[in-house]
Image (tube, rainbow, N blue to C red; front, side):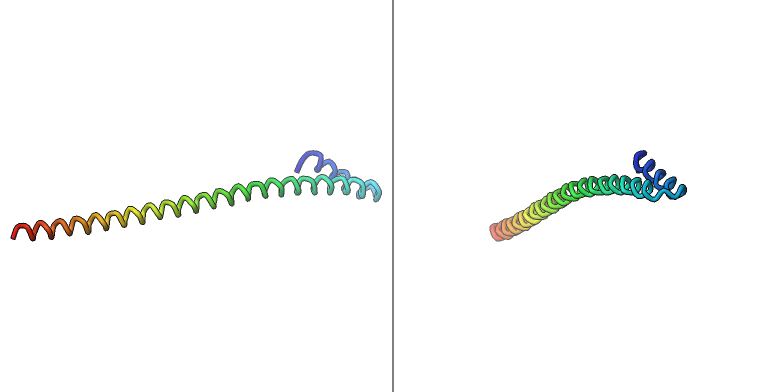
Length: 97
């Protein structure tokens, strides 16, 4: 809460204490205007932050998918290499006989 907002609330309380309804109403109106503005500015900043977070999540998800594809490709290459080695071993065994 800003100093100005505190001052407006203090003015509301003082006006109520002194039974000045018009002053209380005016001070409360000023307080509500400032509070509403601060909320709207805060929500706007939160929306911007949430969009940034959403973009970061999408990028992270994309990176994870790319990483998984690379791992799958690497695994398939290892399987192919193993099959190739097994064929060579079988061929070498056949040549020895």
